[in-house]
Amino acid sequence: MSGRELPPLNALRAFEAVARLKGVSLAATELSVTHGAVSRQLRLLEETLGKPLFTRQGRGLVLSAAGEQLHETTSEAFGALREAWSALHRTHTPDAFVLGCPGSLLARWVIPRLDRLRHDLPALQLHLSAQEEPLSANLADMDGVLLLAAAPWPVHWQVEVLAPERIGPVVSPRYAGWSRLQGSPVSALLDEPVLHTASRPQAWADWATALKLATAPVSQGQGFAHLYYLLEAAVAGLGVAIAPAPLVAEDLASGRLEAPWGFQTTSAAWIFATPKGRRDERADELAAWLRVELAEARDHATPEQT
Image (tube, rainbow, N blue to C red; front, side, top):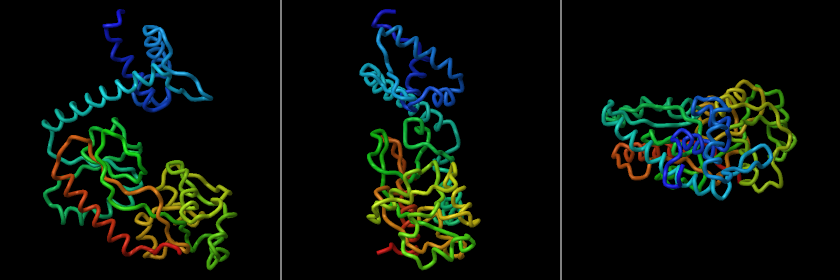
């Protein structure tokens, strides 16, 4: 193959997925092929190019200089293809606004407000899509994405910050250690086996940083794959969890959970993101509505600890 010819599209697609997801197994799952098939496509590219695209670092893969250059180009190219395909698809399908959102936010914050949303924005036909991954070109078929995230933002997305993130420890009065913790200073948590989630492993550390504590709780209790499961475990009295204030507002109001040490503002935020270059008045209306809802939730939430 001469330098002017393109390598097979499947090989480029496999490379782009591995580079973006930082793993062959994750790329294979996304592409619905085997681990070996992706590895063969990568070898084909490297043999054709005559230089490595990845180097191994521990158990992971790191892009080489050539790999970085190719990834920049393939990321833009496949992102543009996804956007073009999505635009063509939307012109032939019902005019629903597709909102991507992590399942925990959908279940605990968006869905309970759907009746109010339909009342306030009756013309908006909304389709909800549970999405657990961060902003990437892979979400280009979404009209908008609601997330809790921290800057910097990907260049292909227009991001509107809706509200600062406020997180804090929550615990059920049913928890066996509640009588020991009730009325205690926040330092009592540092030796408590706290609940945690794989979707936000740094949450306790972010909370400790916001409080200017020297350390976060070091004794890790039960872990959960998603924030939704973590909060259900806290309501069931299984331990102390860490949560964004809006997601536990109903539980606090009903007494199912307590937030004895309040909530702290972190460097993350509630954001509403839309693919850059795509203008949609519905996105502006939805973003404004979300901003008001979050402001009202903040006004009624437990105040920050001082």
